[in-house]
Amino acid sequence: MDKDLIERTKRTAALYFEGIEDEKPFELWKAFDPELARDLSLFITGKMYAREKLPHPTRQLITVAALTVLGRMDELKLHIQAALNVGCPATSIAETIFQTAIYGGVPATNCALKTLRSVLREKGDWPLDRSSQRPSEKTP
Image 1: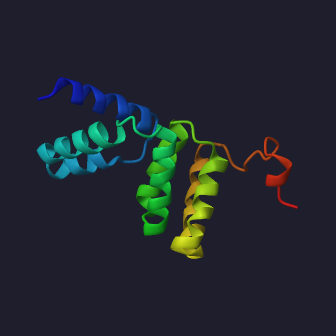
Image 2: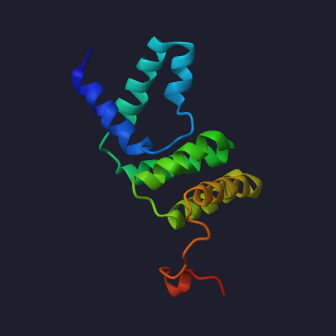
Image 3: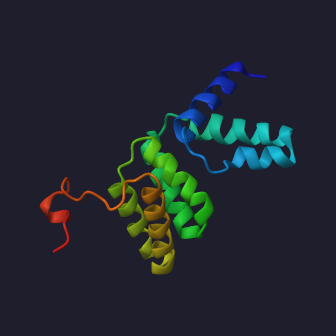
C-alpha cells in the first residue's frame, strides 16, 4: 500500500470533513464493504480531492455547483460544510448556487439555498452578515 497516498488521503479528509458530525460517505461505504470503502476513499479523497491543480476552495465551489444542478441535497450539505472548512465564504457559496439557476433551474437553486441556510443555522452563522459586502452587492 502506498504510504504517501494514505497520508494524503488522511490530510485531505481532515481538511474537508473536520468537525462535521453528519455521516460521511466513507462511513456509509465501510458499513457495506470495508475494502471497497478504502479503495474509493483513497481514489476520491487521496487522488482527486488532494490534487493541487485547483485550490481547495475552487474545487469545493465546483462540487457545490454540480451537486446543486443534480439535486443531490444530502451530498450537497456535506460539501457546503466542506466548502466552509476550506475557507469559502458563505456569500461565495450562495453566489455559486445562484449561478446554477441558469443551467439547473430555479427549483434546484432554491433547494440548494435552503440547504446552505440550514448549514449556516446549525453553525450559528445565519442570518448572513452583509456589512462586509461591497455597495454594489447589497440589495436595494
